[in-house]
Amino acid sequence: MGEFIMEKDLYILGIESSCDETAASIVKNGTEIISNVVASQIESHKRFGGVVPEIASRHHVENVTIVLEEALKQANMEPKDLDAVCITEGPGLVGALLIGINAAKAFAFAHNLPIVGTHHIAGHIYANNLMQPMEFPLLALVVSGGHTELVLMKEHGSFEVIGETRDDAAGEAYDKVARVLDIPYPGGPRIDQMAHESDEAIEFPRVWLEPNSYDFSFSGLKSAVINYQHNAKQRGGDINPYHIAKGFQDSVVEVLSTKTLRAAREFNVKQVIAAGGVSANKGLRTELEKIFNEEGIPFFVPPLKLCTDNAAMIAAAGTEMFKAGKRSGWDLNGRPGMELRSWND
Amino acid sequence: MIWLGIDTANTPLAVALVKDGQVLANEVTNIKLNHSGGAMLAIERLLTRVKLTAQDIDAVAVSEGPGSYTGIRIGVTIAKTLAWTLNKPLVGVSSLKMLAANAAMYNGIVCTLIDARRQNVYAGAFDAANGFENVVEDHHYSIADLIEKLDSLNAPVLFVGHDVDTFWDVIVETLGERAVRAPYTIDLPDAAQLIYLAEKMPQLTGDAVHNFVPQYRRLAEAEANWIKEQKNK
Ligand SMILES: [Zn+2]
Image 1 (cartoon, chains in turn cyan, green):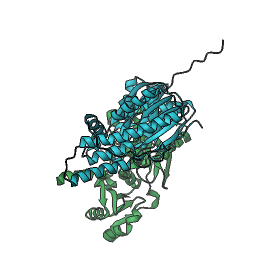
Image 2 (cartoon, chains in turn purple, green):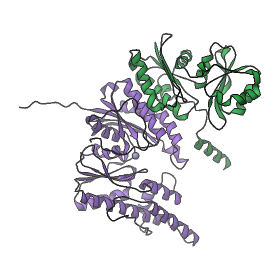
Image 3 (cartoon, chains in turn yellow, purple):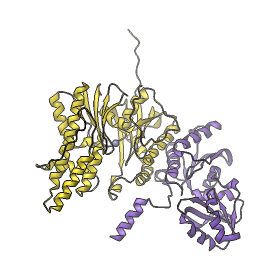
């Protein structure tokens, strides 16, 4: 009989502060959430109609040690029980990123733990690994306030961005249309709700770009909504915001799901996953579930609290990096424009 | 008792270790540094140099501002995280008072200031003869307002800080011979002074460490605008 090697369980602390959530989480072996704490600042930013970076940074300093303590307490663990600290290195708001980063470094330094700088989008994708094992090749549709990307993964740590937005991110388009419709921040979930409640839709254009492209563009759609609203007002006609919301959402969902399906077929993927804040969108979720069910390709989207920013996803991605031997130094710094790169090259 | 002192409130980066009233190590650098990348590295370097580890730290002193928003947050985040997770006390000290303490042998009013751009400063004035009590509150002032406040003190004022030179001409214009310029050797923040002041101040523990935040001495721009809008409604 061959030698039997017992693999030690890995307990990783994840920390995330790239935008307006201060979050900490402990994850076992990259797949099992032991604790998951998120302090949202959304109430504070509402009055400004969006996230104000300076205010976000101030709140992160107020929250960071409280959130860390809570994550340890809920897990009933001590720092000595941990194997590493994983932290969002980028992309994100620089002032916000560096609160999590410096807290992570101080914590890790105090307890002589290694530290791993992690990519925020890799985190969103790896949120799925907390629900079911990722299978490769895998296609991820990443949709959030800052991102709209199709990412092909051939194995753990391998990321190939096959399509991305050329202008607005999907979530950004939602926020802008919400503003046009006078819906208070954050407007995305409300538009989704209104679209859901409407049985009629205004016909807005679908932007497909070049026939082979997996890229996206949403600024034209946003302008079409603004023009429609403007013209309707000038004619003095009735404007039904519910019909606009449904028309807008139908266009976004159709483009996103059609391109995702085409890519899934071309690359013969075993799994399709959705990630990022906008993947919580009911309209998008339902459509993707339907088409991939028909196609016979397993499709997954994490539950709401793992779609929006959290630290469990950072710990999940970071665990794979840690296993691949990746480590950061005490000079680790925030990288607001960090690109998603493979870590297994 | 081993103290760690950290100041990243402005351009200079200052860190020090003090053990039982003796400076073990002290480092200050005054070039445009990236504190987020450099502060933790400096702390590690200092501890390694004196053959100590983070676990040997008994108390943490930090410059709480005012100064660069981002800069203060880096020092404060590191300090409060270390204090919380090592379960050790934390003391926050004004970045302006810390600088004034460099003039400990002086027997009069000391003004320290930090350039806040567009003819504004973060500044305070302290009575060196009376435990560095504030005689002009730490605040964000226009340089004109600051000079007016100092003028009304009717006493000589010693100016300390590497940003003083930027405003020296306009200071002398009003204060004349009452304005005294400190030698450049005491113009930079000294983390050992920070610890020296911290030793005499109340120590924060438990929830007070969690709740410790920078002293920005100024509202964020968005917040100031928002308050203005509410008033105009
Ligand atoms: Zn995100």
